[in-house]
Length: 423
Length: 175
Image (cartoon, rainbow over all chains, first blue to last red):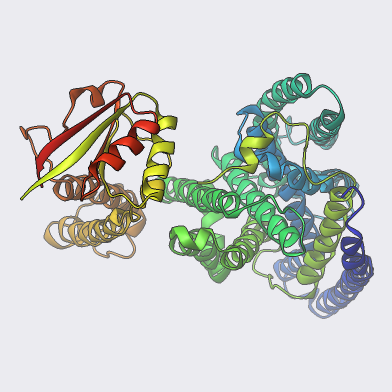
C-alpha cells in the first residue's frame, strides 16, 4: 500500500501539462489585456485630453480595473485553493482535539489534502509580495498616492502597512505550516512507535493549533480579503470566511475519499463515513448561510453608507453570481442533502460536492472581484485558466502526499472504532 | 383475547442485544423490549421499521414557513404598515430580509412542536396516563423483553434462560 498508488501517478501525470498550458494561457491573456487596454487608454488620452480631466480619470480607473482583472483572477483561484487545505487542516485539528472516533480512517486523506498547504502558501505569498512591490493594484491601500488622498485609509495606516502586512502573512503561514508538518510527522511515527504517547501529543498540539488558527484565520481574512476594499469592514467577516473554507474543505475530503474508494483503495471506509461527511457538508452549508445572512441583514438594516456600499456593488453589478452563489451554497445543499439516503449515495454526494465547491469558488470571487475590478467582471479565460491551473497544482500535491504514506493510520488507538463505525 | 407472554429480565444491554439476536434467529416473535435508556442499534436488531417522523417534521416545517410568510405579510405590510428605521414598509419583497429570522424561527417552532405532539399521539401518550410498563425496574437499571408464546412454551423458556436472563416469568396478558 505504501507505494501502491501507481495508477494515481499515471492519472495525475497529465496534470502538470495542463498546468503549464494554463499558466501560459493566463500569462498570454494578461499580456494581451494589458496591451489592449493600454492602447485604449492612449487613444482616449490623445483624443480627449482637452475635453475633460474627469474622462481621463475615468479611463485611468477603468484601465486599472482591467489591469487588475487577470491578477484578481489569479488571486481568487490561488486563495480559493489555498483555503481548501486550510479548512481541511482545521477539520483535522478539530477531530484530533475532540478525539473523534469515526474519522480515523480518513486522517490520511485529510493529511494528503493538507499537503497542498505549503505550495499554496508559497503561491499566495508570492502574489502578496508582488502586490507590495506595486506590480499590481489589488490592494489600493499599498499605493501611497491613494492613501495621501484618503483620510479613511490614513486612519488605518498603522495596520495597513506593507512591511507589517508581510510580517503578519509570514507569521500566519509559518504557524499553519508548522502545525501541519509536526502533526503529520507525529501521525507517521505513530504507525511505528508509541501509539498512546503520540496520540496524546497530537491531541495537545491540535488543541493549541485551534486557538492559534481561529485568531490568525480571522486576521488573515481582514488582511488578504477585506483590505482589498479598505473602507469597508465587518466584524463577522473572519467567521464568514472560515465557514466558507471549512465547508469547501469537508466537501473536498468527501470527494477525494470517494475518488480513492472508486479506484479500489480505502476499503474500510463505509457508507456511514460518507454519511457523516455529508452531514457536515449539510450542516456547515447552513452555518455558512446563517453567517452570510447575519452579515447581510445587519448591514442592510443599519444602512450605514460605508458598510452598505459593499453589498450595493455586489447586488447591482454582480447580481447573478451574488444570488446564484446563495442558491448553490445554501438552498441547494439544504434541499438536496436533507434526505438521509442521499447522504449515503456516493454519486449524489459527488454531485452535491461539485456544486458546493464551485459555489464557494464564486463566493471567493464575490469577495475579491467587486473591489478589484468593479463592474468589469466576467468569468472568462483568465478566471477559468487560473482555476484550472490551481486545480491541477492542488490535485498534484494532494495525491503526491497521499502516496507518501500508507492510507491507513495503523497506529491510532481509535482505529477499531473507526473501522466499525456505523451510523 | 388472552395471550401468554414471557417476561424475561436482563441486567446488561449487551447481553440483551445478544439475546434479542438469538431469539429472533429462532423465529420467535418479540412483542416489546422495555429499557431504561435508548439502546443504540436495538431497533435494527429488533427489525423495526425506520421512523417516518422526519417526513412529518419536514411537512410541519414547510407549514410553519408558509404561515410565517402570510403572517408577516398581513401584520407588517397589509394590516398596518410599520415604519422601522425608515425601511420600505409597503413592499413585501423589499422588506423581506427583515422577515427572514421570523421565517426561520417559525419554521423551527412548528417543526419541533408539532413533531413532538405527533410523537405523543403516535405512541399514545397523554397527561395522567397510567404507565404501560410491566415492571418498574425497567425505569431503573433492568431490561425487560416480552415474547409472545404461540405453542412451544417449554422450548422457548429454555431458550430464553440460556440467553442470560436473570428472571423468566410467564404471564397472561390481554393484547
